[in-house]
Structures are given as C-alpha cells and as structure tokens.
Length: 294
Image (tube, rainbow, N blue to C red; front, side, top):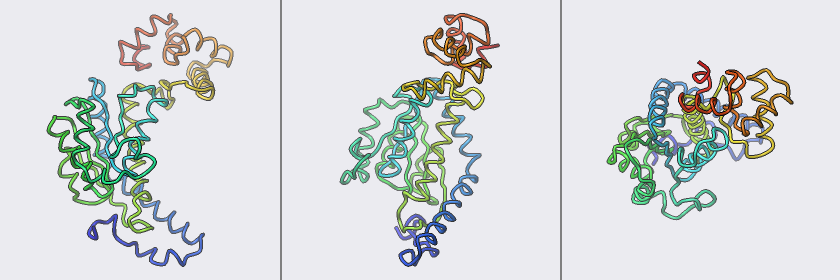
C-alpha cells in the first residue's frame, strides 16, 4: 500500500489540521488543478478507446462500468445520466458497483474484495464479445475489478482499465489501460478527492464523445435527450428553435406534430418532409440528423 501514489502522504498538507480554512482550500484547489494536466497526457489513448467503444455500440454492444466504493459510484452515476441526457436504453450503458445498489449509499462488507461477485454480476448481464467492460479503481488492484476484467477477457469482451497509480494489476489485465498519476491526496488515501475527480472527468469524456459518435448530438446540442420533465421539454423546444430558426410558437407546434420527438421534428422542418419520412431517414442513418438530411 505504501508504494502506491494514492496512499502516499502529500508533503504539502502535512499540517492540514493546523492550516486556516482558506489556506487549506487554496492548497486543495492547487492540487485539483494538477488533475486535468495529467489527463491531457492520456488523451490520444482515450480517443482510440472511445472510437472503439462507438464502433462496438453501433453493432449492438454495451458499455459496462465496474468499480467499488467511489469508483463504482462514479460509474453508476455516469451510466444513469446517459438515459435522460442521450435517451439511451437502460441496458446500453450499465454501471456495476461491488455490493449492488445498497453500496451506492453505504459500504457493503467485503464486496470490493470479492472477484467472484464481479463474475456473477457480469454473467447476470449475459456478457458477450460485443460488449466493453471498463474497470475503474483508483488503486488499480481492487479484487472486484480484477475479477471482472479477467472474466470479460475470458468471454472475449473489450476491456479497459482506469486507475490512478502506475503499473497497476488492472492495467496488466485490460487490453486498453489508462493510468492517471494525480499524486498523493490532500487527505492521505482519500481517493474520492483527486483520483475521484480524474475518474469523473474521464467518464465524462467517454460517455459524451461516444454518444456524439452515435449521432445523439447535433453541433453541441443534446438532440436525443429524454424530455421527462417540464425543464427538459422546454429545452427540447429551445433546441428546435435554435436549429430550425423558429419562434417559440412555431417550435412548439412542430414538436407536437413530431409526437414530441426532437430529432424527427428537426428533420421534418429542414428536409420539408412528413414525420413518417423523417423517422425512416433517421433509422437509415443511425439516428444522425446531418446524414438524414442528405
């Protein structure tokens, strides 16, 4: 444990308990600024991984995050956000956490130390070679993640490892390892801090750019969002206004005519076609608006 960067003591915060609140916050802020600089180093590798994920999901594959504790919670969070943001099916992007849903709120004794639980969780999903399994572990050696990646390799799924140490066990197991050396935490061993921030930023990149590749974005607009509340309905109408250059009343009428489906509404207006034809065009072009307009 002492050899892991994430468990080392940070020389800048040896007297954390003696600092003023402002001094401590400034130190935390300066340490946090190191995270994106480290992520910058892995962007080429990350871009290759995202392109691969996109290709596999176009063929019906799934994106599956696995982790324990903070790492697992971040994976579950990213997966959950894909449904309202990109209108994915609940099984397109899946977050698995050691100990199950109970572990989202409280620690489940011994769950992260069980590689068998990981295998069971993946078997329950009928894991296949079309899927991508991303193991997330700040330490890089969490047994639950190790077991999951080993089983995924056995099945023939594509495996990715995200860790915040160097030369980690999960990096050796995964076909596509990503290591972000963010250095010792401000609070020794508290990997919900810089390590958690690094993981969150990387998961943001993976899910966002994968969904861009799947045609769920037009320009920088969320055209496949699921309008499950009034705020998102208003956002959908606003997006139609922006793309189609319509006033509010026109956009609302078009949205209604498109049965409250944003992408068909846009194609209907820009291609001057019916809802049925717009839907067929989108289906023929993997849901990508720009290709559906050609």
